[in-house]
Length: 120
Image (cartoon, rainbow, N blue to C red; front, side, top):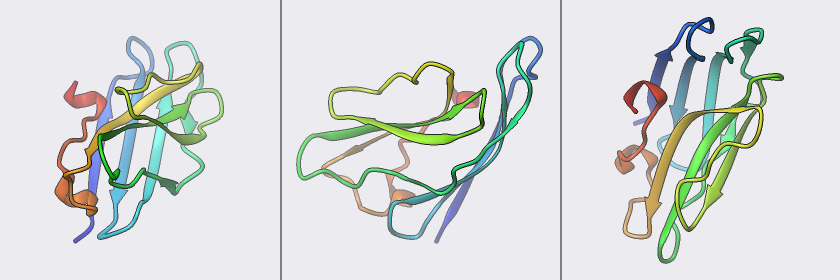
């Protein structure tokens, strides 16, 4: 069963605006993302570059990953690390953070460890 995570936080005037729907598949690593972001002081940007690919379940250890969106272009991308949650690149806003340990199911629906800005 696929799942969509909706996230809405901020207003773009006082706090950064993040308005996303992130779709997780039944299987595989193709994640869809639609919505918009607005860094305070910048224009609203529709999100582009969907789908993005999440990392798979590692053979050992943990894959930490984020979906980030460039607030000047709207381009979505994934950033990964095996040593801890990565930080967003310059000009990017994190819209989802997750970790996948080697003991996890390859089904992203069963992972359950993701967080979004409205849950931080």
